[in-house]
Image (cartoon, rainbow, N blue to C red; front, side, top):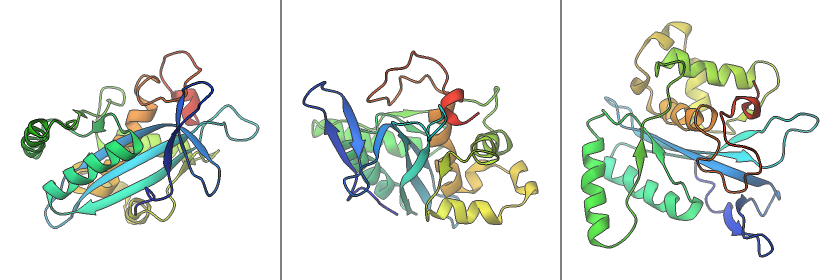
Length: 217
């Protein structure tokens, strides 16, 4: 699922502030977060971009988050090319993924080629920990808190929500990397909800700090 065709990065001629706008709906997003999970067994890897609305949910101070891009492929090189395209189009500054994964070595090789071509490299960073943990069960709490009462996380017709809906509670005890499309979404969500608010912000008027209150919990 790629919504890149209708989402456009725009800069205000009055303030110089950047934002991401959907010209069809008029929705303006204030920041984005990217996650990538690598192929596992027969399951393809996945690249996911989440976008946080600029305006709060009506009647609250909480900000909605949408899955705006989801891309899957079993080839690491293809995933890297997609990340590079999204980095240029949607200004994704950091890709969240476990840096200990063996596939990051292939990203370094991809970056070496980009540097020789004098084009920006992909910037990888580990997803922030949830209370010191990066387990599936702990990251699942981010989704639970955004969907249990007031819903602030919208999956659209993404594959991630389809896979999420068939998971059992016992699956949360497994390694998150076994579910790449879910993992990439959770890595991106952790980047929004557990990282300093300045990362990825295009139109930020709030003080720096954790984004829990904006995340819906």
